[in-house]
Length: 389
Ligand SMILES: *Cc1c(COP(=O)(O)O)cnc(C)c1O
Image (cartoon, rainbow, N blue to C red; front, top):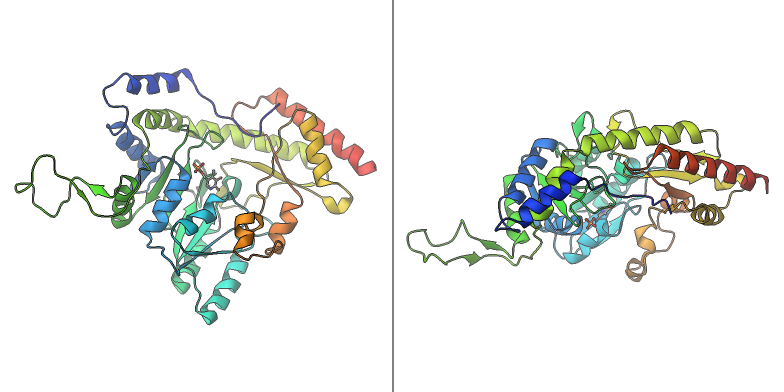
């Protein structure tokens, strides 16, 4: 099977991890802070808090932004469930903003219409989670303008998007957001095994996330002065978690980060090849906005079902040909957990249309030209025969 995504682990990666494993501190040494400094350097953000997953990073981000019971969090329905689940950890309420039919990211016009309505009903969101689907940034400037008008915080779910750019700035710089979250799961653009990070330019938010990442315990700032307190003394001042990343994972992260730009270039080249080779088929190919440099975590095509093509049978046929296509994503409100919260199963019309047609083709740095040619040839012959039947 050709997977839809896969990591690359090099000899240097293994050596970096090994060096930490052979050192006295395999966690809570100086490698996590070094990884954080490198992430700041790469993105241009002032602060980075590295954690054990993007899910944890989203949770900490919501807590840092004071999301509590009674508050609303809005996000896109076309995302991984974690983008919405962070609201539920905080006891907040969740709602979904339909997607843009061109980019499949949260629709700015749908967001604006929903905000106008919410203002009338006094139900404005505290946080909007902007998901950069497939590695293409949302229209952050427009979301930022709306945030000024309606007073919400912006959390970027950039789990797909590290290495991408928006208006020439690296995603993660937080120019138009409060916090930006990355994932380092092996299917993503770079990996630490499990792992994530939350970037921000606001010292207060960074401090709060760092505190909550490690039990709410602070060793530096205590109510007693250093002179008064015993050498073993520390204080827990908030209810935190153990969301820490280990130092050997951070070593892998540093090593991978050094290859990230190369990876994105390969992803771009493979995406270009798909774009050129598939454009004559009854498919809708990715649309990339001019101000975006897409990290191409995913290459998503829409099967033009209005031309008599069947989504499920094409999906199954490709799997049978040894191509592990996937669907990103089942609209979150369709999940049984969210259905129980009362969302109709066809809540967002554009997300519904998208979901009936979307297929993710394999795309990752180690995908060979030969394998990609096989994928292209398989889809081409399949769609030509399907269209005739
Ligand atoms: C993968 C993913 C996450 C969660 O990342 P983890 O590091 O696995 O917790 C969150 N949001 C999106 C959009 C993702 O694709």
